[in-house]
Length: 351
Image (cartoon, rainbow, N blue to C red):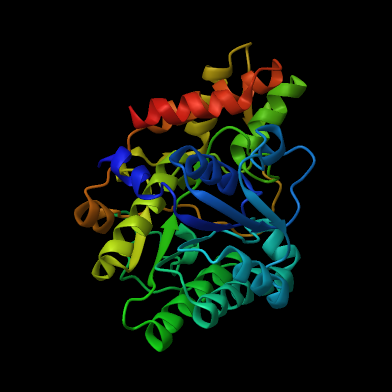
């Protein structure tokens, strides 16, 4: 995969990123800024302690604070941005929050997608649209060889199901309004991402970081659960690649799994072990079941379609992904320049 060629495509392009103040959105905006894109972002206000603020992502882009549920505000900003490329990342992304607030989760993840696609339909100008969903959109059968894009959609919990619905909304708009391939529309079903600057609740690596900062033991809920963990740069480059390729050849548009190789999916216990080893200072972990809501015990993705269509393959083993995360977090804690650390890790990833 030619990373430089992919990035060159975005030089001078008008690009809209929804959810740009979040963890993945911040990394994506930094990649686009470095590529010379004219970046527009629409999202809720960032937390005070966030990657968006710490790495000064707002510098060099046009940022609008708003809710994707607000169709009028979203439309007004879309008309201002007139994007050629659209990345839809805005979402309520936490499984447990979905159980607590199902209405909000569905409104954001389903109607947010409807509102954005309506902007694309009515205002025009976009040539490529990518909706980022999740590996949890599939009916939960815990198949050992990994879910494939042809498997049934039926996420188990409110968050997962809302993203399944977002997939269906995208497919319906594609068939009903964009059958000519303008814009080309795809969805990307990504695995669990890790990396510096994720301060979310109820996520294993952020929980590990908080424990490390407090000098406490890492507590795991489900150490045997298998997940397709990957560094955040892995799916982001896949997103950039898909959106660029389909802009030039709409025939490649479709649904794509984005995750690590099957044999690189690990148990959460192993992930925590990688973290404690990388962090050092005698960190330890233990298991403490809090009897929380259902979560899948086994989740893998088959990414053959992405690999054969684009020649894509993951670059960093999950242990390296953890080490890069620890590097960034320790840079932050020591008062270092986390923006420069981001750029160095991006350069290292590109190679």
